Image 1 (tube, helix red, strand yellow):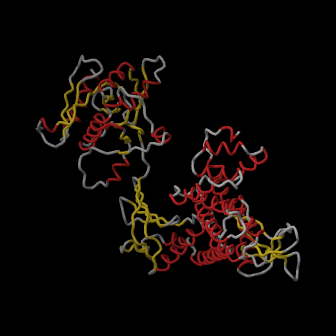
Image 2 (cartoon, rainbow, N blue to C red):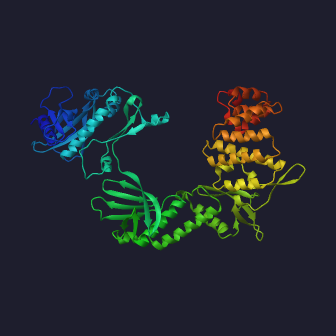
Image 3 (cartoon, rainbow, N blue to C red):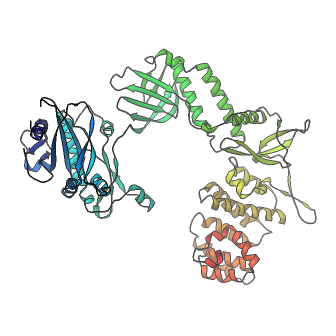
Length: 601
């Protein structure tokens, strides 16, 4: 029995029944590395026009005697010499045909050799002559067979540039700061019953990056895809109330998942859409959990929900699944979440509470906070001797003000630091008292760590205090702490910068005690972090450097804001060492460029 001839016959027979392919595979072909080719056409038909030809795909066929024909995949040794030829040709479809002892039964396996994968295989040759390659079962339906070659021909044409060019990875492009135009696609037999997502679920996709001069290169080969999805914008309503304006749809091989919020899934069986599953696993941050839990309560109460006007009844869901939601327990838990939200809102917390990482200690701290803020009861705290401090709950660092209870000095009454009821005084050397704001106590680290600084309240508090020499000094120092915090955040904390600009502008226009040059420099250095300085602002700086009655620090700072680093360096060198070291700690020093090594050393 000639397995090779039988194998070629089975391949020809399989391909001949398709509408898009024409096989030219010969028995005992003597061509090195190939046994023929398969013509791939755009249009279906028994006879094809030359103009419809997409490509001729080279093929190689190997016959093998085997009695076990049940394997879905096999490993087969392929010569590196052949794979070198496959690469230079631009690709090859490799067949292995298993035939039983009697020659009555067979199973076809195949592997796609395209330039992208061939180069990676050949790079690991290491002196060997063959490599075991995984072969998958070749499809038996004619359209599926056509899909194999249509897809292969598309990728073979697109991967011409891979043959002799260097590898390009998506990670390398992103690291270099280049985000290219990416694409992937399919060439398949039209199928009205299949959704675009079904094509994705087949896997074996190549992701192409469009590079300069119109060159396309593969940056990723995606062999398998477990699920695909998309976000759909639509109103999600339960019991007459809108909860979401979008939802996610995930397609898997057997089911479709509709996901609402972070916690709710409506799972539909693709082969029988009457088989439904409704699941709820509470997830997400505090606000997301409140919305999700309220949604599930209302949906279960109404026994349905709406998606863009389409009603999804829950009466098809198994009764035991619905009972497992324990509606009364859900309502009780929702009330607790709402209480936590009220507590955090009262403390001006703007950062979301990450409920996924809450410990038992965090839960206890929330109970204590609720007692202090909602119930307005004194609570036990460690006496640190300071009126302000952080109260930690999960990812939150809540800045609070603590005052000893009048009736029991082992207990404290607590409020948000923003609502501190105490009068704050600033003192000069002569022991004279001057009104101040509690916000001048804040330092760089406090701005970076705190989850609840209310910047509107902060600005209102600062501006409500009449200026004095000592208060002006304190506010200037506060401003510098804010700029340090912004810089240390790698320019991410825009809320701090916007507030700093507001404070600096107010001081420039109203502070009668600080040096005008310092007020201008502080305002303009704040602005320069946000945008390029304008002509009138540059003129203000030029007027400063033209004066002869200011310090070297002010000259240096002004020249830095003017981007005149040579002049800045000249005045910097005129400072004594101690003054230079102090200047380096000022936030304006960030504008010193890297080539001023002496200033930074």
